[in-house]
Image (cartoon, rainbow, N blue to C red; front, top):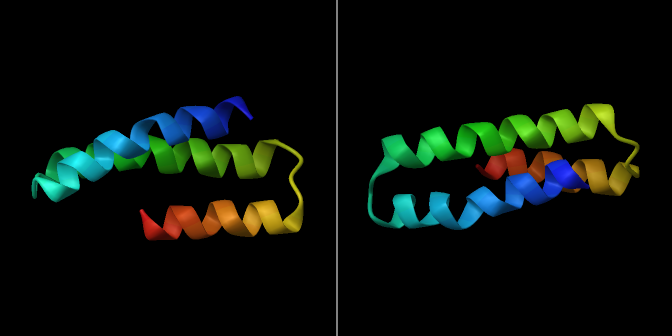
Length: 61
């Protein structure tokens, strides 16, 4: 769960950078969030539905 919380803490900053059309900085913020998500999916026990949801978020980012 800690990985999920870390990932979600970056999201507001990423969206702010995207809205300001500062895509390079947004990408730099998205990257660790996606890495944390992928790590959480592979290292923690999650239901199939939770894993699908987390993967969908990664694809969105």
